Image (tube, rainbow, N blue to C red; front, top):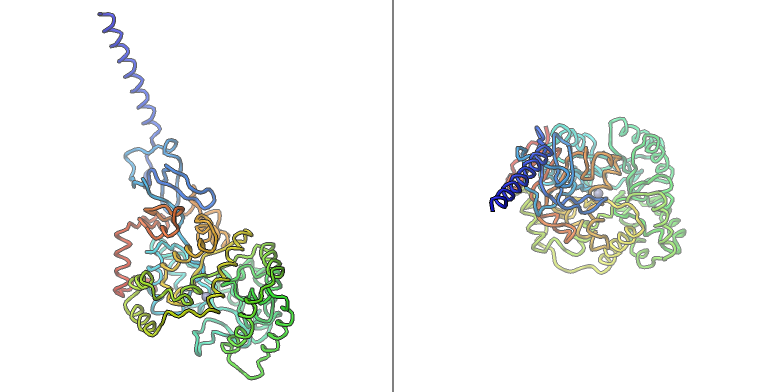
Length: 496
Ligand SMILES: [Zn+2]
């Protein structure tokens, strides 16, 4: 009996000793990160690696300092810990097609609208240089509270430029000949644009000259396919991102040669139309016809060329679907207007008073075809970027990007592929893929913490628990306060 008691006692002693050593060992493994915060037990969604459960992520300064499985990267309770249980961490989102210059009053609030909706970077695809540059500079000065801004400056257009400031805003520069195109492009390069954008009324010679400058300066050349050309030609010369899939269809027909001749004849502009009207006439004469007469062989050849040159495609599905399907009449869309500053909200509501729910069948066919083409491009592994064209078309800044991601899925992309279009691809486009766009050690901490899984339903990207910008953790109530300030029209330091 005595022996038994002593055995039990010693067993207890030994097991307690083991427990003590175990605790000591695990305590020694627990790390304290000074001047940092840790998101504990979170589901990480990395655009390349997909879902990783039970992760600890340490944010220090503006970087992801450490990331590891909970059992490997043990956190001391002394750390500043944010519970990530049942939450999803994804990279911050990009809207790769925005126009600050389009509505300069709304632009004062756009950075806050983007950030509070989880958009941590934007690509401005056309506006007066001094204006978009001031927004970019302000973002550079305040990286923790403003989305990153990449700019093209103005669209470089031809002799009859479309956005000349008379009816449409002055988003473009008119260049009358090749030498002017080169001079203006070089001027933009010297002023420090992040990429270039070529527009629809350029001649093939002008386009080629601009593409040569872009290649020499190692800048991306975005744009629309000039109406004087065909898409495969423009892409082979260096159009490495195409916006809105614009004018692709004009080559996807059997009689594309004669259509090109006809466009060039119209572009001589014998009746001296404005660039806006001239472009509208050409579109009216050919676009719908082309979409109604797509030749599968010609179409496939175009997709093969895009793939061969790895030209990024920014389909801007929302700018087609929202106005054409009259999505702006639907309650969920109207609710997004509450995010807008009051003056814009009133203006948009007033403009839409006379709208009806009639859908134009030709336009519907065009919008559906753009979505079908987006799906075909995804299947062909052509790089896609999510962009909206906000604030055109009653697309609420920030909110509309989430809708774009839904339309990507509707077009045939998986939820993860859809996320890639707003995270990894734009980072890669700007050659930042080694520092941005993934949830990875030493990457810039531009992140979203979501309450629901976006891989179950892409609409869950709207369920934002916190935005992390340049390491700055902005919780839900701060985001709501920010949105309230914007909707009340209180300007938050945007332009200095
Ligand atoms: Zn645009």
